Length: 109
Image 1 (cartoon, rainbow, N blue to C red):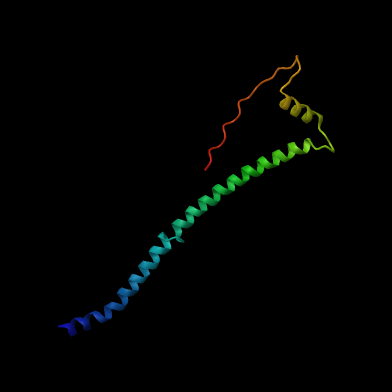
Image 2: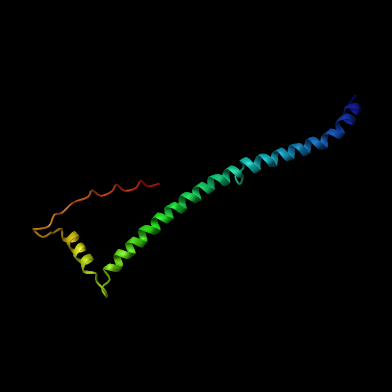
C-alpha cells in the first residue's frame, strides 16, 4: 500500500512544490516590505516631502528677498521704514494702521 501511494505521489510532488514557491514569492512581491504596496506608500511619502520642500523653498526665497532689501550696502528706504515702525510699534498721526491676525502655526507632524 505504501509503495502504491509513493508511486502515485512522486510525479505530483515536484509541481506542488513549484506552485508553492511561486505563490510564496508572488505574495511577497505584492505584500512584502519591498513589495508593490510598500512602494506605493513610500511614493506617497516622497510626494508629500516634495510638496513640503517646495513650500519651504518658496518661503526661503521670499525671506531672502526681504533680507536683501535690508542689506547695509544698499538699503531700501521703504523696507527700513517698515521694519523700524514694526519693531518700535509707532506710526505718524495721519496714518491708519490695520492689524492682521497672525496665522496659526502649522501643527507639528
